[in-house]
Image (cartoon, rainbow, N blue to C red; front, side, top):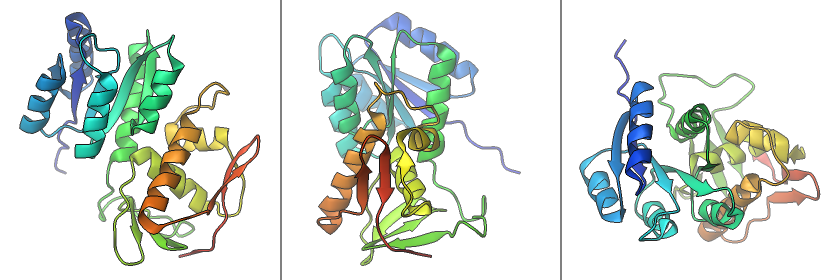
Length: 243
């Protein structure tokens, strides 16, 4: 069996000690690691390397980390985990709204960071047709209203073949809802399924990813009310689903 190539992570942080510490740790965990101190170095690294995930500090001193996040989201489909300060919950909310896949609050345990990175990479990875065949009870393809989900290739397309670009987390949420159509899914269930962690009432990650998901569906296919909010609980998919 051919050995898998290691994933490449780009660390963007203007503190040399943090770049060095994270580079050493992630290299030891089997990743290829690139590091950048600012936006210009980040752009060079992205141009010269195939990057699987960007670990981006939003608290850069001389430029806006949110602006760099917008640039990554607009120009690439690379997964992003943002590093954010504990004292600024608004920053991480805005980061998720701008397309970050997940966040971690400083200071953090390296093991927790590794778990978040691995979870995001799993969600972002395409699934080749020759591995992980779908179980008989979980069809490979589902048709929902005006769009189609390919569970194996992790693609969402309209009926005319237009691809709807979703992050790994957004796809995971949509897939969970589609596989449980008509059933109210709690925020805790959705968080465990899509983010691999228990839901915390102070954590708006699920709601923000659902907001982004609705916005992308509406932008591509027009008004779509299939994802319904269940007050004080979570969400459900109110649609006809066909395999």
